[in-house]
Amino acid sequence: MNTYGFNLTPMISKDKIQSRLKEIADAISEEYKDEVPIFIGVLNGSFIVMADLLRYMTIDCEMDFIKVSSYAKTESTGTVRLLKDISADITNRHVIIVEDIIDSGLTISFLKERLEGASPKSLSFVTLLIKPDITSLDFPIDHIGFEIPPEFVVGYGLDYDQKLRHLPEIYRLEGNLK
Ligand code: IMP
Ligand code: MG
Image 1 (cartoon, rainbow, N blue to C red):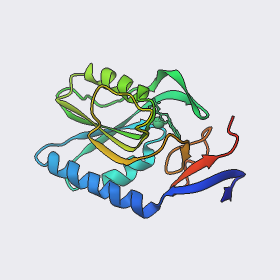
Image 2: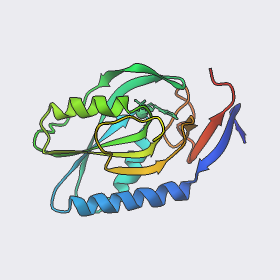
Image 3: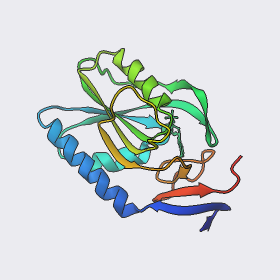
């Protein structure tokens, strides 16, 4: 399928994404049933996951965002930069970091270290997608939507050079991307 001049192949449908997010929200609602967790979305990619995941929550919860950058087009630059910090005070709070995708693991490891420094009561991790063949982490991810092959994907918040985030499902982006 050719959209806006990009060669896109559907990978994960709207329905699959929604039913998986509902399962994750149900599990989190059960885990934190007597607490008020705070979700921290990682901008820009996770804004759509946050919007949908939070609407499936059935317990009281709060949210905030943090913005980091490590990618240039389709490749990690190897360093993570903090572009916008959280505004909430997370000291002694149950914090749940929400990512769109974990690739090398560099971004989520950076966020773990940074947010641990603010002394939360607990820190857990949700990601819609992970590429297990290339991810290297020394801690577990609590909720994973889908494991995908090490290919570049777009849509549902994920971009190519800041574009294609608005597509309602996840596509593999093919062709010469450099
Ligand atoms: P990591 O630091 O290598 O784990 O990369 C994480 C970040 O890179 C994600 O939050 C995305 O912003 C971006 N990223 C990694 N893989 C993809 C992809 O396949 N499509 C779009 N963005 C990606
Ligand atoms: Mg991201």
